[in-house]
Length: 186
Image (cartoon, rainbow, N blue to C red; front, side):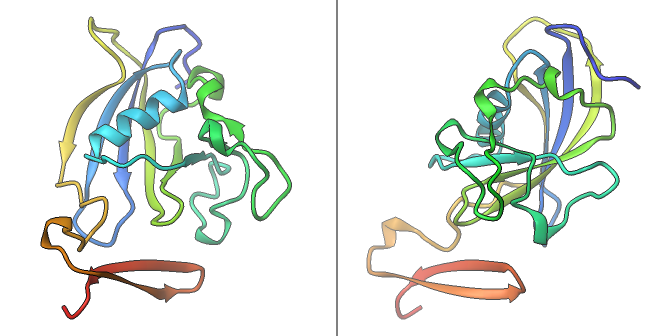
């Protein structure tokens, strides 16, 4: 199946949270003339997030897939405020707010990745399910389907409990650090 070239054509994407627990994914329809920044806003809403952070999309070569050790490598399409050189390379990220899905020439079954919040690194795998879905009346992008509950944006942190919060940084595997937030004494 070839990539859609028609302005306003609709692409259907399956956005899966890359976690160790139960599968959590959302199906999203977006017009191909909309931007990666528009897609970010829909994913933000679809996963019940409330506190905005920087983000980027990564498009590894199709035959390679996701490589944790190369997660910051180009090509990256980043939040407009983050279009500065990568910490690993000197290449500038491209501006997600100026990049339409149509310009990426995506095809069905193509996978790319989305990282939200560079501190917590919420990683998502995005798979193109369809590039020429029917254009229906209404606003785009839109959430078509939900599977699984969204995890809390800041796990184990209930601000209503009061008290001091301690943060422990845990290395679970090389190059992967997690922040665990909890109330002191718990």
